[in-house]
Length: 509
Image (cartoon, rainbow, N blue to C red; front, side):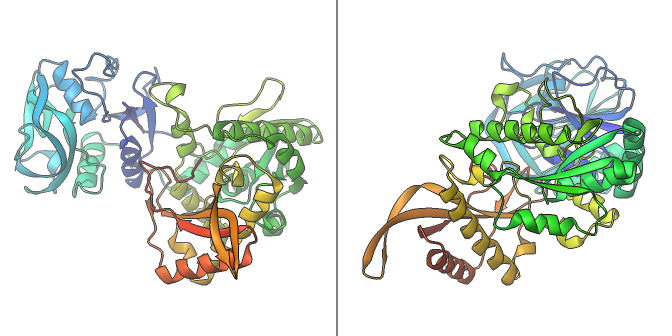
């Protein structure tokens, strides 16, 4: 990828949103921890310093080495970044009299500034900080103010460096995308050439060069990511791609055969491997979510190792890893702060002699779908909801048994089929059911019951980094709840999850 934008992550919940807004401008960008970014910056055209939950005045505040960036590349410093540049470059940052959080309006904008072209006074911005810049850094020039924040935006003369104390990436900053475009396109002159067609052309070329005549084995799941990865690889290496679809015993009802049927006619070489008993045996008695994930990841790799030995001279393992997987598995604070491990991130054990290739590693989910459309993949397949790699294991809270899997598969089938029949499936980004580790008293006929409780989850999102729960119609929820309790033996209570991400995650484990 040429003409990159480097985004330094200081731990803000909004960092991924910055990347999304930049990508929406057809500009490729990458997120790196502030303390571990590339030493070679020759391919980068601009740098964005993100926000942080830290105060620049704190002893443990993130302290990046910007010696290879300041004055050498255009810099946009957002919130913490702007305060950092002020605090350590001759300015002053102090605690605000009141916490500056939420909507604000620009009351002053310096005339004839490219950064604010197309932005009018009174434009709404989103503040999120408890400190405030009281004096600008050396050579700083005020560009904008709000009622409560005098130095809402500034630039440093002699450098192409800009600082803003609000978040242009969030929806509530009305002209935020315009400001980002002004900085990246008009000031930093970053080309807007990151399009699905360009990605396909460049990635197929890279794969041809990287893989040559080597054989590659790929784990298909039936989902969008692995399917798009397979078609990309097929365009690059054709018959040297060997696709394997593993039944881990934790798929949706009838999904193993349905997925195999789905790939017929796509020209892919696909082999189905039914390893459900092996996975369930390894998971027996395990309740801890991380242990479940790691166990499934280990067995998944073991199955692939077994299958790869049946393919003569296979050299590579391809995976459908996408950017949110990578971001959530790497933290500016180190491994201890990781939200959750992903079974397809982190490399292979030493005994497995395959190299990894991940053609979608730098794409968000919506970008994967657009690439898939460019490749001519069936829209119905591209519209499938995301499904977690560990499958239903992380939707069964507590230990895994074949009986629990059967119950959840039946519940999930009623829910998903209901969404389709009511015309709601395509209005939801991801949906599923969760089997809770509690029983509930109920009454069926004249008998008391003591059976399982299930939670239904449906969210709307763009890429899974943030998500809101979906306001499904009450009539639908009433019908699907009634169907589940009547049709699925062992369930007598249904609840609906109305949590958003953050603070909750989409999956319960």
